[in-house]
Length: 297
Image 1 (cartoon, rainbow, N blue to C red):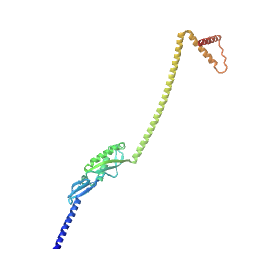
Image 2 (image 1 turned 135 degrees about the vertical axis):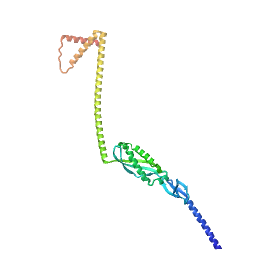
Image 3 (image 1 turned 90 degrees about the vertical axis):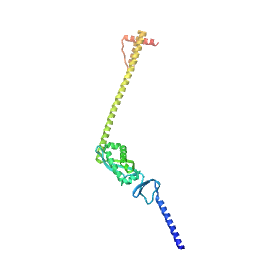
Image 4 (image 1 turned 180 degrees about the vertical axis):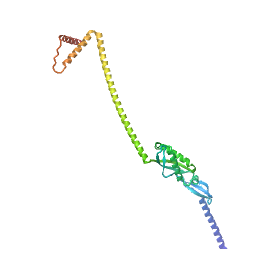
C-alpha cells in the first residue's frame, strides 16, 4: 500500500508539473514582442487574422501563427536605367531610383509577390511616359518637376499595395554619342555667335564714346566762343556807354590807346626795325600820348 501511494503521488505531481510546463509554454507562445522596425502579420487557420504593431502583443497559441514579419524601414530600390524617347525624338538613358516603405503589410503580402520588381517596372513605365511628353531641353531644365511628377504617379500606382513612396530621384540623363556631338557643335556655334555679338557691341560702344567725345568738345568750344562773344559785347557796350557819357573825348581816348598798342607791337618785334611814319602820323601819336598821360593823370 505504501508503494502504490507513493506511485500515485508521483504520478499526480508529474501531471501537475507537466500541466504547469504546458501552461508556461502557452503563455510564452501567446506573448509576441514586435520590434519597433517591424510589423507582424498573424494568420488563423491560414487566413489573415490581425497585424501586430511594435510592442507587446497577445495571440492565441496553436490557433494564431505569425506568418510574415515585415520590416517597415524605408527601402531604396537599386538604381535602374531605362531608355526613353523625348517629344523631339531624342533617345536618352535615364538612371532613376525610388525610396519607399511598407505601411500596410497585410496588403503587401497578399496582393503582390515581388515588391521591388513591381515598383521597378512601374517606375520604368512612368519615366518613359513622362519623358515622352517633354522636349530634351525641358528634361534637362525641369528635372525637379519631372521628379515630382514621377513620384506622384508611382504613389497612385502602388496605393493598393500598402506602400508609401517617400522619394524619387533622377540620378542622370545620358545621351547617345551622336546627340552629344550635335549638341557640342550647337554649343560651339552659340559661343561663336555670342563672341561676335560682344565684339560688335564693343565696336558700337567705342564709336558712341568717340561721338560723345567730339560732341562734348564741340559743346565746350561753342561755350568758350559764346563767353568770348559775351565779353566782347560787354566791352563794346562799355565803350559805347563811355562815348555816350563823355562824348568825343572818350572816343579819342580809345583811338589813342589802340595807336599806342600798335606802336608797342611794332617795337616788340625781333631784330632791329626801322619804322617810317608820315609827319601827321607822328603828330597823331604825340596827341595820343598826351591824351593817355592826361587820362592817367
